[in-house]
Length: 201
Length: 212
Image: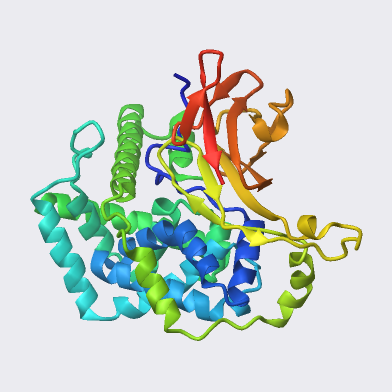
């Protein structure tokens, strides 16, 4: 049987191929013409990525709520989008702003903490059934959640969503140099937090 | 110049006791490696999918959309509308599985083209066509082509375009019907779409099938 190469590394989400911008522009135009079924296609194309991004920033229950609202706002404001960035970057920008609003509330921190506690008893397993290095997923997530919001955002966008600095610039609205500084600081902070979390657990 | 370079220069200038300097350099390199491993382990852990997209996510989003005002076109869309009139049909993306091709099945749409001559038959002017996007994940391939009943299994095939992520795509407008197809990688390997229905090709292999 022929072997088909996998897309990227094993860590990249499956089925996360970027859609063609020409197709997206036509779908968007159909939306502007009132065809909501075309918007359902856009939701299918970007839903998994937006949902994953939101969950990484604010936890699963709030993340799903934010992801849904992201698309609802995208629908309402679609006529304003000028295609100066990719549609996905714009969706991430909307999601990021919504996540920032939620991150100010204590409810999100409780949600994330409760999730981390639940996961501590069930460490993440790799595909071969082996523990993920010496770190459980709960330890890593607790450390990431302790990062200040702007550094957590930068780290997630760069290392979890695997975006280029140019894509991050379109989402966050900062110059690339400033983004690199944030990512660098996020790495240093996370390193210290991981060591602290590991020693506690 | 990074701190390690300074220490190396000092060592070569023999301005510090060699033994202690070498030990310090080795310790710094070792710490850098441990830091790298720590962060890479954290990144791998974070990238693992833990919360799948809920099955009813799309339905919930569309319920919210139904309650919102319709989007209004901005002025920048005016020029694009003229171009859009020449585009007949689009649809939706169906199915995605690890390491395998995506086939976009689209909903048909009456096609008509701006500026077509009045000699065009009414049937041709409104013929329903479907836009189908074929995609293959093959980051190591040098070229990928699509061959099928839609191009008579042409020897050169239909060239797919390579994306930045190593994925290859081609978008075709096809009349409704049933088509057999396969991917040809680097002109040598014939790869059927393992996620699609397939039929025997009469040569001991199988072709993928799509009904649109």
